[in-house]
Amino acid sequence: RSNEASGNVSSASGGGGNVASGLMASVSGGESNQATASNSAVSGGANNVAKGTATDDMGVCSSISGGQNNVANGMYASISGGWKNKAKAMRTSILGGKKNTANKKNTSVPPT
Image 1 (spheres, rainbow, N blue to C red):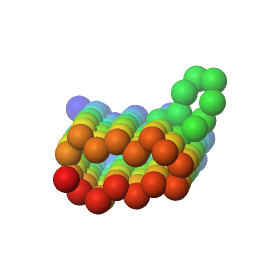
Image 2: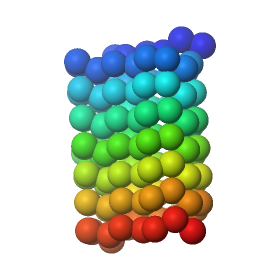
Image 3: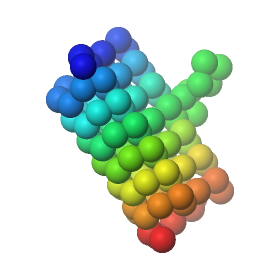
Image 4: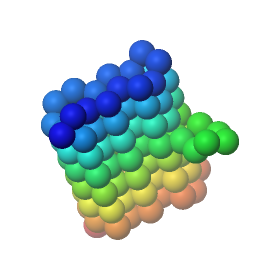
């Protein structure tokens, strides 16, 4: 499957079915990953989403490093691997694990 880089100054490389549609968004490797927020990045893994919405770009500057089915849509949110993690608030981070949710500002969640 081909990759798509439709955002201004965005890039999608490696893997397959990856989409970088946010302004200066980047997806490198993996499969079916999406970086739809401005300045967001997804590196590897599968079915990960660093996203904004149609009405606001809350996922701006969010990142996901690997894992599967992770969602980062908080401003400056970060997920480092794991499975089904959600970083939903501003300046949150999740360090792997599974099914963790960080939805309170300035929160760091260790793996579970």
